[in-house]
Length: 231
Image 1 (tube, rainbow, N blue to C red):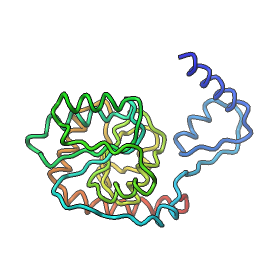
Image 2: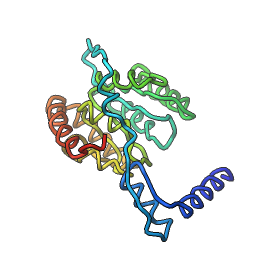
Image 3: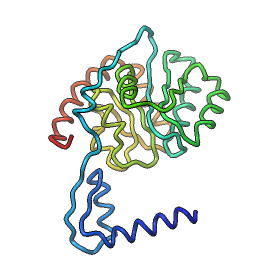
Protein backbone atom coordinates (compact mmCIF):
# COMPACT_ATOMS: atom_id res chain seq x y z
CA UNK A 1 0.00 0.00 0.00
CA UNK A 2 2.72 2.60 0.81
CA UNK A 3 4.37 1.92 -2.57
CA UNK A 4 1.05 2.31 -4.39
CA UNK A 5 0.40 5.62 -2.60
CA UNK A 6 3.81 6.94 -3.64
CA UNK A 7 3.23 5.87 -7.26
CA UNK A 8 -0.24 7.47 -7.32
CA UNK A 9 1.12 10.67 -5.79
CA UNK A 10 3.92 10.88 -8.38
CA UNK A 11 1.46 10.18 -11.19
CA UNK A 12 -0.90 12.97 -10.06
CA UNK A 13 2.02 15.39 -9.74
CA UNK A 14 3.30 14.51 -13.23
CA UNK A 15 -0.15 15.00 -14.79
CA UNK A 16 -0.69 18.37 -13.08
CA UNK A 17 2.77 19.53 -14.20
CA UNK A 18 2.36 18.34 -17.80
CA UNK A 19 2.32 20.61 -20.86
CA UNK A 20 0.56 17.98 -23.01
CA UNK A 21 -1.20 14.65 -22.61
CA UNK A 22 -0.77 11.42 -24.57
CA UNK A 23 -2.43 8.07 -23.84
CA UNK A 24 -2.91 4.68 -25.45
CA UNK A 25 -6.67 5.19 -25.84
CA UNK A 26 -9.32 7.90 -25.84
CA UNK A 27 -10.79 6.38 -22.66
CA UNK A 28 -7.49 6.75 -20.77
CA UNK A 29 -7.07 10.27 -22.16
CA UNK A 30 -10.43 11.31 -20.70
CA UNK A 31 -9.38 9.94 -17.31
CA UNK A 32 -6.11 11.91 -17.42
CA UNK A 33 -7.96 15.13 -18.25
CA UNK A 34 -9.88 14.86 -14.97
CA UNK A 35 -6.68 15.53 -13.05
CA UNK A 36 -5.71 18.75 -14.81
CA UNK A 37 -7.55 22.07 -14.99
CA UNK A 38 -5.50 23.27 -17.94
CA UNK A 39 -6.72 22.95 -21.51
CA UNK A 40 -3.73 20.93 -22.68
CA UNK A 41 -2.96 19.57 -26.17
CA UNK A 42 -4.01 15.92 -26.05
CA UNK A 43 -3.98 12.92 -28.36
CA UNK A 44 -4.06 9.11 -28.20
CA UNK A 45 -1.56 6.73 -29.77
CA UNK A 46 -1.25 3.02 -30.35
CA UNK A 47 1.56 0.74 -29.17
CA UNK A 48 0.76 -1.93 -31.74
CA UNK A 49 2.81 -2.00 -34.96
CA UNK A 50 0.87 -3.69 -37.75
CA UNK A 51 3.81 -3.81 -40.17
CA UNK A 52 6.05 -5.74 -37.77
CA UNK A 53 3.22 -8.10 -36.81
CA UNK A 54 2.37 -8.80 -40.45
CA UNK A 55 5.96 -9.74 -41.28
CA UNK A 56 6.03 -12.61 -38.79
CA UNK A 57 5.55 -15.99 -40.47
CA UNK A 58 3.77 -18.53 -38.30
CA UNK A 59 2.79 -22.18 -38.50
CA UNK A 60 -0.83 -23.25 -38.25
CA UNK A 61 -0.47 -26.64 -36.62
CA UNK A 62 -3.87 -28.12 -35.78
CA UNK A 63 -4.59 -31.83 -36.00
CA UNK A 64 -7.19 -32.08 -33.27
CA UNK A 65 -10.88 -31.44 -32.69
CA UNK A 66 -10.33 -29.31 -29.61
CA UNK A 67 -11.93 -25.90 -29.20
CA UNK A 68 -9.01 -23.74 -28.17
CA UNK A 69 -9.70 -20.73 -25.99
CA UNK A 70 -6.66 -18.51 -25.59
CA UNK A 71 -5.70 -16.00 -22.91
CA UNK A 72 -2.49 -13.99 -23.15
CA UNK A 73 -1.43 -11.54 -20.48
CA UNK A 74 0.06 -11.08 -17.06
CA UNK A 75 -1.14 -13.78 -14.68
CA UNK A 76 -2.68 -11.77 -11.85
CA UNK A 77 -6.03 -12.10 -10.07
CA UNK A 78 -7.52 -9.07 -11.87
CA UNK A 79 -7.24 -10.82 -15.25
CA UNK A 80 -10.11 -13.16 -14.32
CA UNK A 81 -8.59 -16.36 -15.71
CA UNK A 82 -9.69 -18.24 -12.59
CA UNK A 83 -13.30 -17.73 -13.70
CA UNK A 84 -12.61 -19.50 -16.99
CA UNK A 85 -11.04 -22.43 -15.15
CA UNK A 86 -14.13 -22.63 -12.92
CA UNK A 87 -16.31 -22.65 -16.04
CA UNK A 88 -14.23 -25.44 -17.58
CA UNK A 89 -14.92 -27.47 -14.45
CA UNK A 90 -18.65 -26.96 -14.95
CA UNK A 91 -18.83 -27.76 -18.69
CA UNK A 92 -16.09 -30.40 -19.11
CA UNK A 93 -18.49 -33.34 -19.40
CA UNK A 94 -20.89 -31.76 -21.91
CA UNK A 95 -18.18 -29.99 -23.92
CA UNK A 96 -15.05 -32.19 -23.68
CA UNK A 97 -13.51 -30.37 -26.66
CA UNK A 98 -13.17 -27.12 -24.69
CA UNK A 99 -9.53 -26.35 -23.84
CA UNK A 100 -7.86 -23.27 -22.37
CA UNK A 101 -4.38 -22.11 -23.42
CA UNK A 102 -2.81 -19.59 -21.03
CA UNK A 103 0.10 -17.46 -22.21
CA UNK A 104 2.10 -15.39 -19.74
CA UNK A 105 3.47 -15.53 -16.23
CA UNK A 106 2.80 -13.84 -12.92
CA UNK A 107 2.13 -14.08 -9.22
CA UNK A 108 -1.24 -15.82 -9.64
CA UNK A 109 -0.03 -18.72 -11.79
CA UNK A 110 0.19 -21.08 -8.81
CA UNK A 111 -3.45 -20.38 -7.89
CA UNK A 112 -4.58 -21.20 -11.43
CA UNK A 113 -2.73 -24.51 -11.39
CA UNK A 114 -4.10 -25.33 -7.93
CA UNK A 115 -7.67 -24.64 -9.10
CA UNK A 116 -7.18 -26.71 -12.26
CA UNK A 117 -6.07 -29.67 -10.13
CA UNK A 118 -8.92 -29.18 -7.64
CA UNK A 119 -11.53 -29.22 -10.43
CA UNK A 120 -9.82 -32.08 -12.28
CA UNK A 121 -9.34 -30.04 -15.46
CA UNK A 122 -5.55 -30.19 -15.66
CA UNK A 123 -5.86 -32.01 -19.00
CA UNK A 124 -8.04 -29.15 -20.30
CA UNK A 125 -5.48 -26.41 -19.71
CA UNK A 126 -2.10 -25.71 -21.31
CA UNK A 127 0.15 -23.21 -19.55
CA UNK A 128 2.38 -21.74 -22.24
CA UNK A 129 4.62 -19.51 -20.12
CA UNK A 130 6.03 -16.25 -21.47
CA UNK A 131 5.74 -15.92 -25.23
CA UNK A 132 7.74 -14.03 -27.84
CA UNK A 133 5.76 -11.80 -30.25
CA UNK A 134 6.09 -14.49 -32.92
CA UNK A 135 4.83 -17.16 -30.50
CA UNK A 136 1.88 -14.90 -29.62
CA UNK A 137 0.94 -14.68 -33.29
CA UNK A 138 1.34 -18.44 -33.65
CA UNK A 139 -0.94 -19.18 -30.69
CA UNK A 140 -3.51 -16.72 -32.06
CA UNK A 141 -3.36 -18.38 -35.48
CA UNK A 142 -4.10 -21.74 -33.86
CA UNK A 143 -6.84 -20.67 -31.43
CA UNK A 144 -10.60 -20.66 -31.94
CA UNK A 145 -11.51 -17.98 -29.41
CA UNK A 146 -9.59 -15.26 -27.58
CA UNK A 147 -10.79 -14.58 -24.04
CA UNK A 148 -9.95 -11.67 -21.73
CA UNK A 149 -12.25 -11.50 -18.67
CA UNK A 150 -10.20 -8.77 -16.95
CA UNK A 151 -11.60 -6.55 -14.22
CA UNK A 152 -9.43 -3.64 -15.34
CA UNK A 153 -7.80 -2.77 -18.70
CA UNK A 154 -6.81 0.13 -20.92
CA UNK A 155 -6.70 -0.83 -24.58
CA UNK A 156 -4.90 -4.21 -24.47
CA UNK A 157 -2.53 -5.05 -27.30
CA UNK A 158 -3.45 -8.73 -26.98
CA UNK A 159 -7.01 -7.92 -28.08
CA UNK A 160 -5.79 -5.81 -31.00
CA UNK A 161 -3.62 -8.73 -32.08
CA UNK A 162 -6.60 -11.09 -31.83
CA UNK A 163 -8.64 -8.65 -33.93
CA UNK A 164 -5.90 -8.44 -36.56
CA UNK A 165 -5.88 -12.25 -36.68
CA UNK A 166 -9.68 -12.06 -37.19
CA UNK A 167 -10.48 -14.18 -34.15
CA UNK A 168 -13.75 -14.10 -32.19
CA UNK A 169 -13.29 -12.57 -28.74
CA UNK A 170 -14.95 -12.60 -25.34
CA UNK A 171 -13.75 -9.65 -23.28
CA UNK A 172 -14.79 -7.47 -20.37
CA UNK A 173 -16.60 -4.22 -21.01
CA UNK A 174 -13.96 -2.15 -19.21
CA UNK A 175 -11.50 0.54 -20.27
CA UNK A 176 -11.26 0.98 -24.03
CA UNK A 177 -12.11 -2.64 -24.88
CA UNK A 178 -15.36 -1.59 -26.55
CA UNK A 179 -13.22 0.20 -29.17
CA UNK A 180 -12.02 -3.26 -30.25
CA UNK A 181 -14.86 -5.68 -29.43
CA UNK A 182 -18.27 -4.84 -30.89
CA UNK A 183 -20.76 -6.84 -28.84
CA UNK A 184 -22.53 -9.46 -30.94
CA UNK A 185 -20.36 -8.77 -33.99
CA UNK A 186 -16.72 -9.78 -33.68
CA UNK A 187 -17.27 -11.15 -30.19
CA UNK A 188 -19.00 -10.48 -26.90
CA UNK A 189 -18.58 -7.94 -24.13
CA UNK A 190 -19.14 -9.32 -20.65
CA UNK A 191 -19.29 -8.18 -17.05
CA UNK A 192 -16.08 -9.62 -15.54
CA UNK A 193 -17.82 -10.29 -12.23
CA UNK A 194 -20.68 -12.24 -13.82
CA UNK A 195 -19.42 -15.82 -14.20
CA UNK A 196 -22.79 -17.03 -15.51
CA UNK A 197 -22.66 -14.51 -18.34
CA UNK A 198 -19.10 -15.54 -19.24
CA UNK A 199 -20.17 -19.19 -19.20
CA UNK A 200 -23.19 -18.42 -21.39
CA UNK A 201 -21.03 -16.73 -24.04
CA UNK A 202 -18.44 -19.53 -24.01
CA UNK A 203 -21.17 -22.13 -24.49
CA UNK A 204 -22.71 -20.08 -27.31
CA UNK A 205 -19.34 -20.03 -29.09
CA UNK A 206 -18.91 -23.79 -28.54
CA UNK A 207 -22.33 -24.50 -30.02
CA UNK A 208 -21.95 -22.11 -32.96
CA UNK A 209 -18.31 -22.58 -33.92
CA UNK A 210 -18.50 -21.99 -37.68
CA UNK A 211 -21.02 -19.16 -37.43
CA UNK A 212 -18.90 -17.33 -34.85
CA UNK A 213 -15.71 -17.88 -36.85
CA UNK A 214 -17.14 -16.52 -40.13
CA UNK A 215 -18.82 -13.60 -38.43
CA UNK A 216 -15.62 -12.61 -36.60
CA UNK A 217 -13.59 -12.77 -39.81
CA UNK A 218 -16.05 -10.42 -41.54
CA UNK A 219 -16.61 -7.99 -38.67
CA UNK A 220 -12.95 -7.72 -37.66
CA UNK A 221 -12.11 -6.57 -41.20
CA UNK A 222 -14.69 -3.78 -40.89
CA UNK A 223 -13.57 -2.73 -37.40
CA UNK A 224 -9.94 -2.64 -38.54
CA UNK A 225 -10.93 -0.17 -41.26
CA UNK A 226 -12.29 2.17 -38.59
CA UNK A 227 -8.88 2.21 -36.91
CA UNK A 228 -7.56 3.82 -40.09
CA UNK A 229 -3.86 4.70 -39.90
CA UNK A 230 -3.61 4.36 -36.11
CA UNK A 231 -1.44 1.27 -36.67
